[in-house]
Image (cartoon, rainbow over all chains, first blue to last red):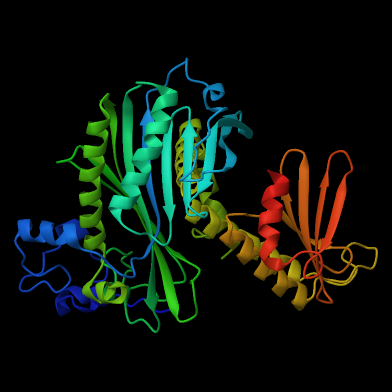
Length: 295
Length: 165
């Protein structure tokens, strides 16, 4: 695959001729004139309301995850979860152990030794015809919806119902971390001229290097200061889901931690805010070409 | 220029590599690795996706084995067995099942193992085209089903899940 670095080609000639210069992407001049990859010059409010209603028929969401962590309590142990039964209509019948693994390396006198241990943290239940997975752990709750993704409202309502079951077991322990994570797989049609035709976050390969790209893995951590949240965005090339496409995983994890929320209403309000932010982030990562592909 | 005077020789940088292998370097590397593993584990989609990549990598490795790989005259896994194994891996991944290990079969083919504490299941795909589902436990109870005759392909994942609990 050839990932041409078209941005480099668009540099002024004087800049192209100075290969040794240091580029600081954050200092790049923003483009002026009409912005074809964002939604034009929409006012922020209009843009936000457009996002609220935005629905893609072929949404590339492979998994949506709601993760809520609670304060550790010595009174809450695995035994509390052993008799959990989540009854129909959800039909979460398959039960699996959730393990946490830890590999510890130690360097002593130049010799590296490693030890591994695994502890059981809770249980996972599979339901919704294999599309829903819920974890009840001693340190928190995670609900996953696998593809095909339906709507935020369905995801949230299902998670709420299950959270109430979890609450009955753990009691009124405060929530310390709330996360919303969407794992997308973008299938970019081949032949592709440039990644930037479809995505707006990609590794910038120097024009002085070969533009052949066999793979990449990229992580950015961006504070969301207005929300007091953090975004961890992982992007990686993965084996294509079908011939004729290049597949890129866009993994958006936006979360708030260091909390101490005792009201569940507050928890769901935070999740609503994270969801709006997640949508903005997703839109910020794709181009109009990509929007057309998934619409 | 003699190698020991070559300023760009690779081993020139070895001391620098040793210097950064400090406990705090290892701790930071461990934190990054643990964070990535946690992210993988939290996502079922990514766990299955990367699990399948690993499984298909294992199949590719054993597809290159030569005759008598076990020194008892075993045939190497053939193209049919590899293809059938890939298909069954894909089907099982759809049911959120990943293999524990994949090995060549001494009978000529590929065995895909699924294990829990006390029970083991393997799907054996033979070079001549047939497939078997074998289930056994620590007490020596064994059940063998021929896929396509005793059990349909579509029922294999359900049977594995039911047996392993």
